[in-house]
Length: 458
Image 1 (cartoon, rainbow, N blue to C red):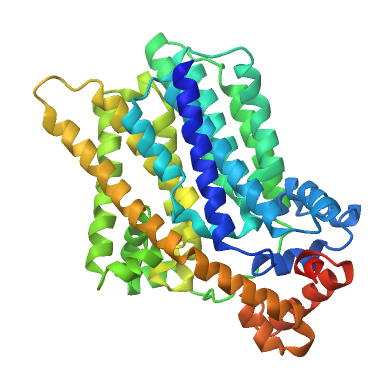
Image 2 (image 1 turned 180 degrees about the vertical axis):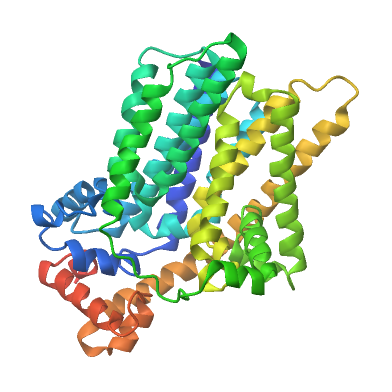
């Protein structure tokens, strides 16, 4: 019980630190993704025609409820969404903490994991409150993987079998959005692995995981059906053939992947200030790749998956997210694109799985094999040092980001006197280059008419 309370205080400290950062790095004025949200859903947030649309699952249904609460009680406040995001980040940390408590992960490893979870390498999603539901989805993923692990290891609690059935419906249909692909793939791989492993051990096939697998696949199929009705517009994406581009510039894809791996050590903005040339990025990217391979080798060599499947599921999720970002974002032809802070929460799964693997493996190291512990510690220190540098930079940048938001607020209040080009640049909205300035103006007009957001303070 004392351990739970102490670990709980660490989560609380992480949440308070995140709220402190958000307060000092932002100001309550819409921009970027919010322009699209305002134009699509406001002011009539109660209109069922805006909810019951074919591609509803791609629009993350839980956000409709949040918008109703936000507009009704808080005048469409960005701060409301930001606080939700931090609290959901805390929920995810809580799920990982439950695992650490149940698995008796030592305090140094736990603190390292919490430091990475609350690192400011994900500042973009923390400051841009529209992504709060993503943190909620990730918390659901962590918790579901934890429940799978409890069933696998024989430590299941009352209701865990039922949770395997309803969690994917709630998470995929309510909050997961595009992230449900990797989530579902990890679950299906885990259920398949557990079924085959039991067949090898018990010499008979079991249907124990058939229904949980179906309960993961069915809502994902519904998501794909809904996704087929969506229309996406990615400004700046080139219409190129993957195969031809791979044959022409294979080095580009390797650098894209290695830099996305490196971003879990030092965030892109901090790296641009610290590094000269590609060498540091690629070296750190190779080291992160080596950490992945070492963790997988330990899982295989020491059969850690028999002791706990949770770390291996996280490693699989992290690796799949790196592959997914490469496959879906390479056509922007920007090597650093995969380093964006918005992708950090997706990549973080893998790093947490690696560190938890090291923590489990450390228990089985015999006396005299100190060098193995030193290798684990070296990787952990690499992640800690890089994230500390990133967090330090973001704390330094916080007042500058807030000042930029306050300047944006002044422009918003005077939007009638600004040109479309000025609005497009100031509000960082480029979904449609030709009409984006007009769309910003339209969004501000809606907020102005309702006396919401920045216009409440006049």
